Length: 238
Ligand SMILES: Nc1ncnc2c1ncn2[C@@H]1O[C@H](COP(=O)(O)OP(=O)(O)O)[C@@H](O)[C@H]1O
Ligand SMILES: [Mg+2]
Image (tube, rainbow, N blue to C red; front, side):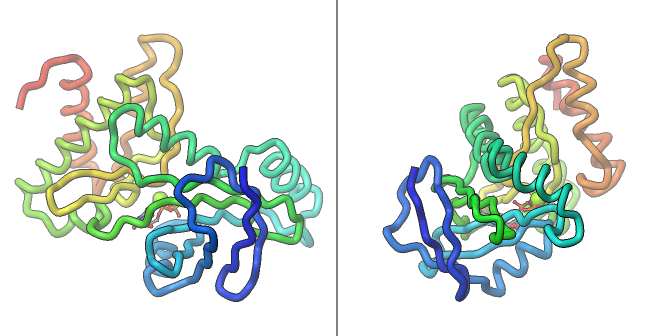
């Protein structure tokens, strides 16, 4: 554990950082046009270190302390801070599960928590910022049909690889993946849950994790379902 005083743009915030790894002595984080583009893709806030190597993903409080004081106290203060249910911690643990399952994830530099009630962004994930990759959605849109099938196939194989490790991803969205120029995937925004205890419930849980809205439409969702069903049943036909 390490106590870090991090200047964010101009304002300092103090975090207790768990599992710190390869962190520089001084970490100064700023918003840039790149982090603004990342924010436009999801709901988290992003900051980047001066050398552009470390990306901080920050999750603000859900409730306003002034407008919903009780909800804020129970959810944001007690549960997320004191009971350690912070988003960054959950994502850190999920990234570790993906990595152990053999999937590629960004290198993690630790996760942090602020106990200061005045800090409205108490959850902090510090990770490697990947440079030579684009989001799955962007790559998918630019590909022709053959390229899309190929990318979808890689995606399905990795979903099955994760299922063989006993987990299912809770937010299977192309924009939660980065794709490099060799077509390799890096998994981001990790939220995984264990497969249900009963074996007969495994396939429904995997199938239900695929949604048309997150996989560029019903046709691709259906293709993914068919391919994953084949791979899961151990019949790798092409
Ligand atoms: N480690 C990273 N390296 C490069 N880009 C990233 C990284 N993490 C996130 N991004 C970019 O930020 C976007 C949003 O990230 P994500 O973790 O999905 O945030 P949210 O929780 O807001 O959905 C991603 O689609 C990706 O473009
Ligand atoms: Mg996301």
